[in-house]
Image (tube, rainbow, N blue to C red):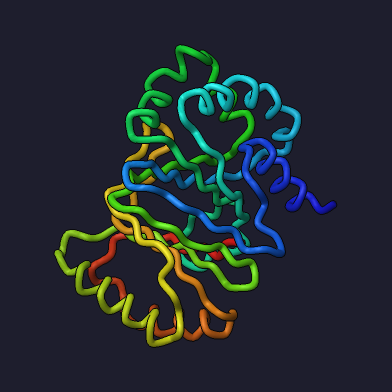
Length: 230
C-alpha cells in the first residue's frame, strides 16, 4: 500500500470516520449542530503514535459529543501556499459541546498539544454552527473543490463573491456548501471569511472555471486557499 494511501487509512481509523471510495457519502447537519473542518499533514510516526491519542483525546471528544464524518485526502493545492494532506469533516452535538472539548481537553489530557505536534507537521481547525439543516454528497466520481477566501479592507468582496458564484454556474459547477462566521482555537487558527465546496463533472470543466476565475484579479480578497479533495 502506498504511503499516502496508508496515511489516509490510518487517519480515517484514527478519527473514526470513513474513507470516501467508490460510493458517494451523504453528510447531514441539523440546525444548531457544529461542523468541523480539519486540515492537517501527518508526520512519519503518525501510525505509531495515534493509538494513545485515540485512547485519550479522541475518547474525550466522543464523550463530549463528537460524531466522526468522512475523511478525504487533498490531492492538489490549486491556489494559495497552504498544502495540507488531509481534509476531515467532523460533527458536534452543539456549540456548547464543541467549546467544552476545547476548554477542558488539556485538563483531561495534559499533553494534548504535545501529542498533536508529534503526529502532525501542520494542523488547522475551522468550525461552524449550523444556522439551518443542510446535507450534501461527496461523490468520488466528481471533482470536489474546497475554496477558502479572506476578504480585504476594500469592501468589494461581496461583488467578488457574486461574480465568482456566477462563473461557477456558467462553467457548469455546482455549489455544495457555503460557510461563513468561522470559529477556531489558539494554536490551530484557521478563520476564512468564506468557505465553499463546489462539484465539477470533470477536470476539464474545473480547469475552464479556474482560467475565468484568475482573470477576476485580486480586488476584494486578501488571501485564498483552494484544494481538490477526494
